[in-house]
Length: 424
Ligand SMILES: [Mn+2]
Image (spheres, rainbow, N blue to C red):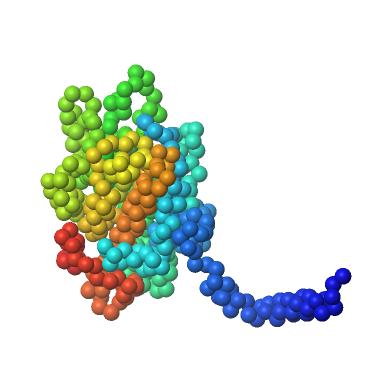
């Protein structure tokens, strides 16, 4: 039997709830939502549904209302690999490994800049649901999906209130895309989509391998059209299967090479040269250092040419990043890779990918996926910082017009390879 005093208390409590529920309806909803948001929306690194760096997620491909300046999208595709499969699980592994990246602790001390707290709206667009049974169809799907993302007006352009404001951000109208692979074939889809908006692109390709292989170099007595499409031939296809070629002639750069070559001579390299590529070997870093690698890249690409930045995680030594499809000993360290990327801030990168993360071969510490997540962070830092830099140049031409949040860009500590700052 319930004691009378307790019964009274229970009744009072339910009446209070009833009255309180009605009293707050409408009148205090905004304040209540604000309070709930304050209490419950700041995730710890280990809480929350997994998105890249806890960024907001929407299925961008069908959500026409949510605008973005940089779209991160997964391409879980791995049916064109020549050795270990498993990169279809790369996007979810990279997202999980990015969990310690948050906007409130996102200041990149090497760059003097927080990419998550500046002008650019970066969102995680989820994955392209790529078919696993038909590679020709998969490439079409990925191309169409990336094309769709690029076809939208960027957030900063969309938000510009006046014609003159819009004209100032005209060069930011096309959003940037960062693809989480997936095997390296996804780069072909990205080049096809980006070409429609930017024309021919130079490619900056970090990889242990050339990926410009003529498919006849693969040891098979059999042939078919589909055999030509694989994760070591997509740049050959980009150069030879399209008219005009998707890649700008004589500008693109491989960095971090250490692959074995076909046959008994340098014919693979000669063929690569004929396709217009410049090569930087993994070993070169011992002779010319990080600065030498950066300078060699900048000498080829300049700072105006639209660049597609494609990072195969196997550029990192497999002792550090073993979770990948075609590991090659003798690669760069994560620190070297970060410093090279920091030295390349001034490039006009219009799209990027991080590919070949295959978590089944990774360690329990997720070291490969962690390296990939860090590389994405460095790429995002450069993309957003580049936008601020462009705005500064414009401000010099039109003093007083501030349309980007340049105030949050702390001056970076000068480094040997950070020459773009000196120029500006
Ligand atoms: Mn590759």
